[in-house]
Length: 102
Image 1 (cartoon, rainbow, N blue to C red):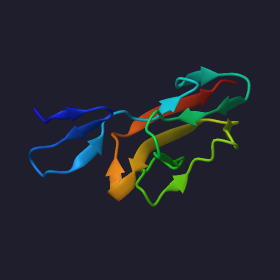
Image 2: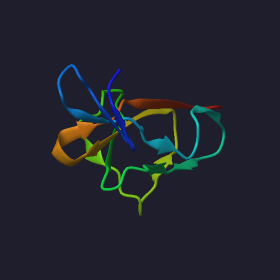
Image 3: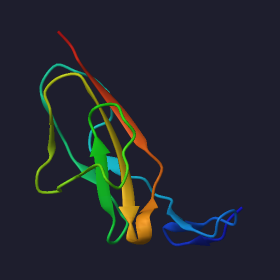
């Protein structure tokens, strides 16, 4: 097990620090009948949220989430997100799928 430091975890395998807290979604995936507004947040100081809407895995090169412009969910879609921090440190991927009814 790696040493734990605040919101970071030191991996003994490669000696790199990885963000251990993934991004949070304001609305859990599931079914919906009216349009939603999704906000993504992170508790990592200086962390940047990257996301995809095309079912691909996000990377530090993916779209950057702007906290001043929430993501409108107007139809069935899948959102995947990560938090990246200094020196290309990346969290695990969080995936939420939204299915429009009717």
